[in-house]
Amino acid sequence: MTNADPVTPGGRVVLVSGGSRGLGLAIVRGYLEDGCRVATFSRSSTPEMDAVVTHHHDRAVFYRADLGARDELEPLVRRVENEWGPIGVLVNNAGITLEGVLARMSVADIERLIDVNLRGTLALTHAVARGMMIRRFGRIVSVSSIVATRGFTGTAAYAATKGAVEAMTRALARELGSRNITVNAVAPGYLETDLTAGLRDEKRRQILRRTPLGRPGTVDEVAAAIRFLTSDAARFVTGQTLVVDGGLTT
Image (tube, rainbow, N blue to C red; front, side, top):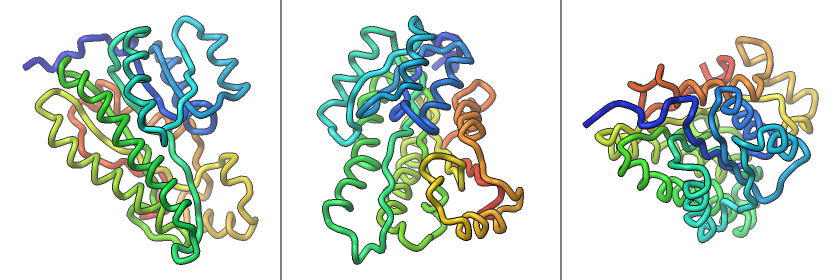
């Protein structure tokens, strides 16, 4: 068995789910800065995503697909590999957040969380991992959340899906390690994004008081952690969840 990457880091094909905005967009931009070829998908594009594809038309592509529609994922993976080459890096970034006390949530909302965050992530990883096994190389990183290990009111269903993703990460690391494939997760804490912009000022101040670094994280900082885990510097790191939260859960 060889430990060599069949494709040099700068030439790797990276597949990022949910790359049209927020953290996903930062991940896409970061890999493009590294010289990689990047394919990403979401249910819809954004002006920012369109601009990235226009600027990097020879190394970036966007597809419309829904992570919750599992029948779309394997054809998408085959299309990426046919048009761009073997996928060397998979970043499971796409997911949805639906908060609410579990007893008051609708069954439909709970099912949607499971369909997207868990079943979709499993299906996409399944579709990509088989090619990685044949080539005996791969890097897989999934975006989790600090709520997977620290309970917060109103996040039970969401936390369950992210906890399952972390369990998948640990088990899959054992399954794929002999094929030179690493599998890790990143668990962000409080980030300054569009999703958190609606937080009440008092809630925001409370979070920052509990954060040793005294500030929210940025999507670029989390994207950098993800890129580290898929880099050659982390080739001996697998089965881990890297917490990027400014010390909030310390």
